[in-house]
Image (cartoon, rainbow over all chains, first blue to last red; front, side, top):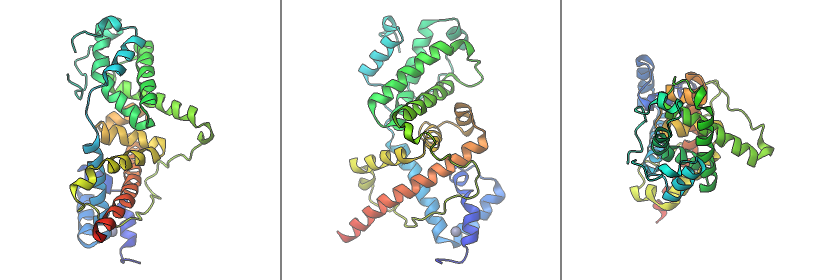
Amino acid sequence: MKHQHKHECNELLGTISEYVDGSLRDELCRELERHLSECDDCRVVVNTMKKTIDLYQTETVREGLPADVRQRLFKSLQLDDLLHGAH
Amino acid sequence: MVIETTPTDISVERLKAGDRAEFARLVDLASAPIYRLGLKMLGTPQDAEDVLQNTFLKALQSLKSFEGRSSPLTWLYRIAVNEALMLIRRQRPQVEIAEEPQEEADDLPAPVQLTDWCCLPESDFLSAESQRALDAAILKLPEKLRAVFLLRDIEGLSIQETSQALGLTETAVKTRLLRARLNLREQLSSYFTGRLTEERTK
Ligand SMILES: [Zn+2]
């Protein structure tokens, strides 16, 4: 076994998602942070989970709808006459 | 053109009264996020466009029953997720009874990949190949976890909005989100640990 706190790791695994969101209750947060200070594995899990979320948020292109897709959408909704309306 | 703003200034009364211009405004506010959701949920522009059109057609048909308890955008997300799930089931009927992700937080899969790859050069994360790996990983998530991850982490809905959009309790959303993030973390760790090994042997 890589380290001796495996049991504690499993117990705290359920808290790390809320932890990276900053919404974990205070006492659990302290408990997790104490554990993280002495457990390399869990620290890696938390860091790579944060990075995973971060990569997806960076990757997502916040662009508008392709013009042809928008045109076909308005047509299918019978809103063609409003296609060039203010938006 | 404002895309990311939640269309809170859309008048539900006017929508329900059949105001076409107001509906067109809703379409322009919400179509980009709905299209993006379809794209990530299904993986192809054609399927994303089907989801997009069906979502707004269904919305038009069911406007009368929209009670305005959630925002119009959350309501549209709900329709869109159902459309996407229906399309997935139609395309792959053989996996209709896919294993249901467990709602309980216990019995979580223990992390396997324990290498820290966060230190890779930024260019490795931004490469086209990495972007493809990211998209492929989402498509490998069980559908129900995928929907939660996309709404919460990609579209930025709150836990409460996500629960409204999916008709789930907030506890179920949190558990699925955790499972989705653990799953993606494993997948990205496998991929980027491979990159790390390449970097070191250069
Ligand atoms: Zn640990």
